[in-house]
Image (cartoon, rainbow, N blue to C red; front, side, top):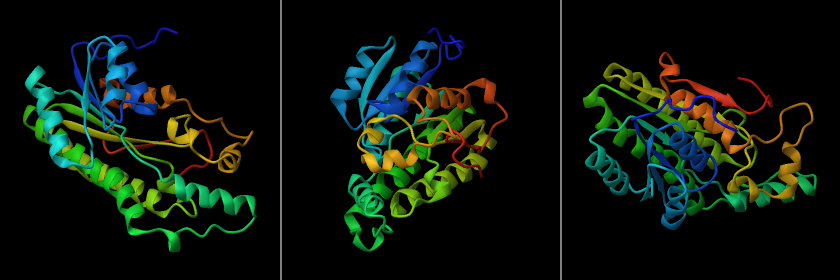
Length: 264
């Protein structure tokens, strides 16, 4: 189906993190279809190359958002090639499959999950390093490029888990809640320099991360009273709206996109 906003990003330069799969890949494809020069950034270099190869005006970048030097190099590469950066969509993030298994086992056994006491430092630090520190690294790099030019839009991909704080998923919920608040604080600083920062907080979405979710948990998200799992493209459409001129007055927003599972 032809996208109704074709050409919104003509002549603009964008970087998308986590762009090798899921929501990030959908965002990269949408941006390219709407005219942007897109840098497809991901920790998985071959996968980012595969996505970029299928797009017009796209270039892959291998970036671990948890490594600040890699993030700075990636943004410097964009500026070196184009002299500007107009849009950033930060979709890179990780979950914890082991914690999900523990939650699912408890659900099947009809008992409360016991996760926090079993979480080791490595599991905690991995999730926080990528989801929270990674968001800081990307926001900082974006502002260093955009603020001097008094122009730009940044969209971070959060999670509805930041609001409903699922039992047994404390590190993920905390990392996303932190990323939301981080984005909002930076948004209030950045707008004085012409840069807008906003967040999308998806609920269950059909991504590779969701595919690894245990069946018992997936069934728990199935409810005929709400929308089914979102598609990556549906979340990408919200991200592109926030990155576009149509959202000129949205600053520091966190848009909950969970299909009606709960409101805040």
